[in-house]
Image 1 (tube, rainbow, N blue to C red):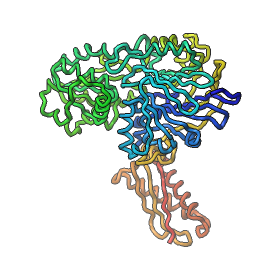
Image 2: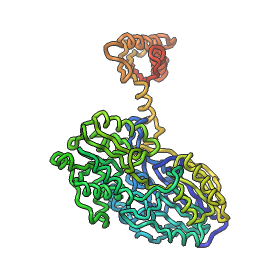
Image 3: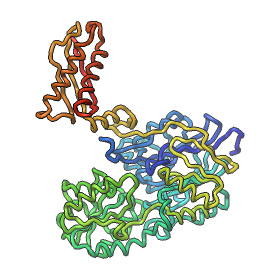
Length: 558
């Protein structure tokens, strides 16, 4: 394809730039307003408890939703939730024609689409590892990397303007336990060919050295487990299939049987075996088996290492898991890192465990985890291989991306651009890049069976209610606007039913007084009368309790 003078190459993150998780990246090529677009990854993140009822959060795809006729396809780099978890929720909304992914990723995605009743309607094209394919205006090539999940891929995106390397999540692990090592030769060949820009993972930019190899973890984890006397539970990410194999090998070496606690663990190990991974790993036991095994012969692999309230470990810690229990003399090993933002939830979970006299071990105590993201030396190594003219850091908070840009400049990258969600970057053939526009970006949350904006009144109102309570007042007036009965009030999360009767009476008196003070009640609209009563009640609770509850007035005219 030849480049026209008016054609531009654009990069637009709508998720994952300025935060860790919830990735949604757009690449566009063509004349202004007529670009051909592709999506790279479509992920979710999870609520942290600050918004009640909010569990699943996805990026707002409104920009590309309005350009469905220009969208050529969706490419998934790997099967982590923050890279494909939003597909079942947003796929129909964005009108995505085709999804491209490697076999293991398709196995995970197919299960999700099947649960959502979408599998038979989706067109999914399987791309082999290292495969080449074309989507719209883009020629794509997968480059195998290593990460904490099978089949992570970087994508070389070739356009008439130049080649962009989108790394996805990655590290350089010489012995990843599952899957092939990173194709560093392919990266060097790409660098020799010429890379215009790299869009690269920033998660561990503050970590010196290398992230470590999965294979190195086996001996340490085995030694830790051998020193435990009671039941041992290991909390890790369900998607970390290599870690599951490492834990299984450590259990075998210490004479323990492995029980999987958590539906997602079963899904990932099934998908792994479907694709030829874990073929030499013994079958796992289900939760029912836990009660029949001797304590010193039991190893339980749990979901919930980030303190997720509905995960298996949280239920075990609170004592309400129906089949798995831990207590005095048992040990929980957190074989994971703390994702920024999850510190409080993980701390609460670990405190619950300690209250039950359970020993808690983390990476601060022993070598029980290696990260799936590149540390500084690996980032430097990537830049030495690829030698891009432009660096665009993503997959990090602003502090991570700014530090990444600094590191890129130290690696002699001439141009760096730090962007956050909604920034439209033009990548130019002369080795320059700049932010040329900003488009609306936001977050959606799963509310029942629908996705609603995080900034909607539904979500904000629920949060305000959580902090300040709510009040419903029913007022009955005649056609002249005169009260014909005493107002009735119901409060939620604001008053004690017995002790606060006097406060409720004062608030009701204020509502009555507000209505009685209306000079022309007969001609006062229901809306205006309700608003006067609402303000009076809210002011009363503000004065008496220093609270600003959500107040609703139901006015009935008879």
